[in-house]
View 1 (tube, rainbow, N blue to C red):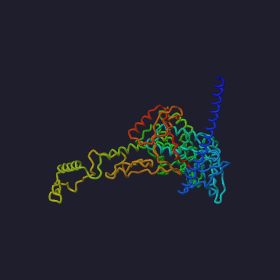
View 2: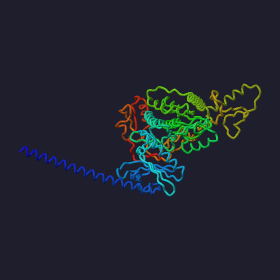
View 3: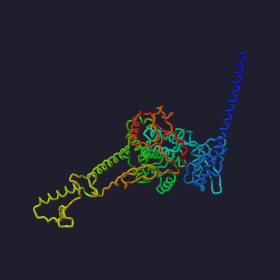
View 4: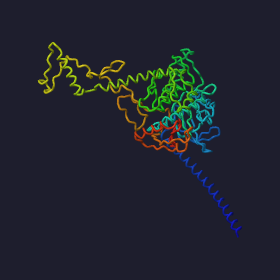
Length: 552
């Protein structure tokens, strides 16, 4: 009887397992069919919406090296290039497909150069991966397709927008710089070295907690020493730099060939310095894109920043006008890797001179602002007016000769008023006797207005507050070349990382809570983050919002 019961139980369990397996297979098949139908429906909806908006589309499925791709949505667009999110019809794998419309030989040459650069790049976690590329001849030229790794979290620009209310903290910024330096080291270690030449926050993407360099269309392996170049050739190089680099990030050696500097891999160091400045202060060091300011290394730091002097000195070192004095990417990588163990940065002579001059100007301006606080704008307070009148009357009593009489205001149009001093008396500029002008020359009282000083505006935020002085210079929208961003303002809940070396673990990537924080809470949070242990990182949330963008 026991054997019979055991056999029956065994048979029942086997039948149960088979039935469960069949049900699970059926469930997976059904789920796969439903998901595929859902994705297909979403793709068709996106195509219809894009057509209604007049946005460009792929115009149907595209086949690249036996891989059939269907469009999901347009991510971004530039002058003659578009980036689409696409899906492999057979496998469901998602990619970024860059489509370039080349209607002349010059554009086609640029596209081919980008493909060749991508093919020559090493397989590196901080460099965007190339899967395939294809050039198709069409009636009006060529269409170039480049199939790339898809970065769902978007660019560093998008990341900054998510943290607009709280700003990125020091440890987050240092981590980004470490990652970018590793990618640049891979480029500069090639033979010959590959110089990116278009580093900016839009050209660094985030994917699976790794920051990756992208957009290699401006890359070059050529070194130019302008001390050995004929002046008649300068215009050729200036035109080339105008086409392939962004002015706000362009270094002095590219802006002014007449300085006879060398153009080499230190170009990327300058651009990375501009990027670091932007990460810290949410504005460009050369926002107005003035070539004269760039050549002279003339920029200022916001006075109310909370960053340590060593980080500011790293920026100064990277933005040294003469490229031979800038550090290499390898040297910078060592600095950022050991950043929290470094007490101070030793500047080169040129960077130190620029720092000293900048601090001197700030000191002079601070003195002038204090002097302005004792001056009077508009109507003179009655107390000050009475002091001035009393002083004039005392001076009159000391004089020996008879002075002209005062105008009798009691018989004038305004009876009851005090007697006014004679019009021949010198009233001066209506400043107190202890008023002192700052060093650097006297300025005419009354002409110094609050709008004499530059004030840093907000990062194109819908809820940004206007500057205190309405006449001050306002910084405009932070333009992204062909990049669209979401309007989220992320204020993530910060937690300490479990892994002290890498800084990425578990809850650190939980979705940030997009809530407006009080100023006091934000200040307390930044102070806490600053005092954390050296490598106890506080990082970014999970940004799979579905609205992210990839640089074209």
